[in-house]
Image (tube, rainbow, N blue to C red; front, side, top):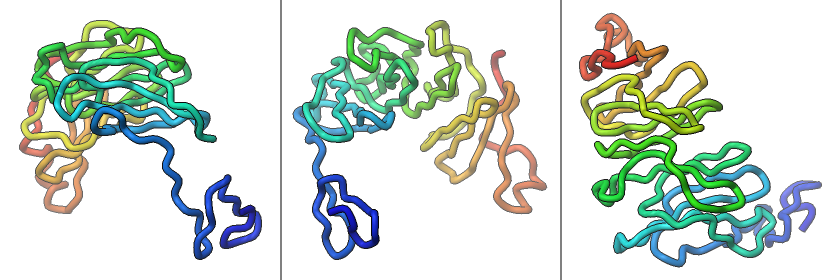
Length: 212
């Protein structure tokens, strides 16, 4: 329908039910679990891991629907992110890092994955900006150029990170105690959520920076 709920609101081929467009199944995992998704407007990309731990795959499908294409296979591809040329993915620590943990990439059209930066302390949460990839490994937040290289430790912390984002100058994350923290140019800081926390200064679970 071209006028679902309001004039000009097209469902793009989906059914209109009670004034809203019905969800349409785009793809189904063939090996176990879909871990993460991303889109560039033309395709939807996602990572899948085998429920029984025997590997994983990066796939894509046109947003207009169609054939699913396998871009690469890898052991435990988890979080993914895109730029104009590559799918970046976190090879996570679900497997205990037997095959190495860190950030890898594969061309948007598919191919053989290559390492961007690896660290066998683990890999759990991940983000990219226009220049670098950032991820958590053990008690550290690391960065590495998207072109590849040796990871650099931005800061260390105590606790687990549940989410991480970047804005080109700062890295922000949420810890398991509910605090929002950040690091800018290597200097760790806490973002106060209350007057008391603002007066207290740096979050007590954040350790000093350990490397440039």
